[in-house]
Image 1 (cartoon, rainbow, N blue to C red):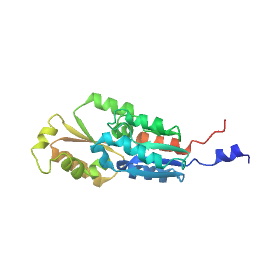
Image 2: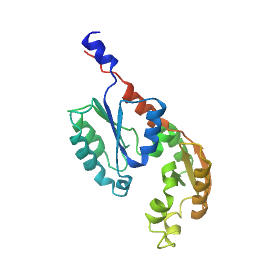
Image 3: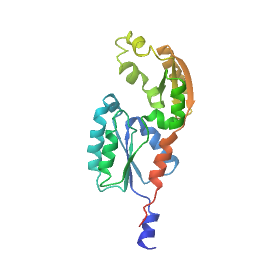
Image 4: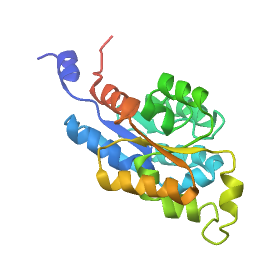
Length: 215
């Protein structure tokens, strides 16, 4: 086998640097598709409370990864960074090809860009939860928004919402019950929409399986 053929037959070394809220889903995808060439590292999901800090945190971690991988997938969409995360990926690509998830947020790439846009246009009064947000609802929503200490804030924050839409990555009866309980707690209607892993799955598989081509 010549050098070019050997490189084409060798899976690329791939780093996925992701939001901690996606850790379980990415591990499941890697296991399902037998992506042994993927290394997953996560930044704290709490960075979403201060999205202006995400680009610098991603940049700092990617600088430490220089020279160790053939390509990198940043497991974030824009996530409130106002385009700065795109700039980081372009900067880091000078050393290692670096991509990020498309779209504005994880709701969009789980549901699919077109489907999410249609859902949001049809009903802008929906409040979305992923499996991760359902699991950590009390800490991230009730605690994070201060409702635990100031219950009166619930009516303030959610005055313009009419329903919770649970974008479900898995079929889990326990999560479904917790999502419905979250809707009841906020006084909202409940809708469940099964999305699976959506574009997260297709992007992880695409980046992991794309072979190097000797030009």
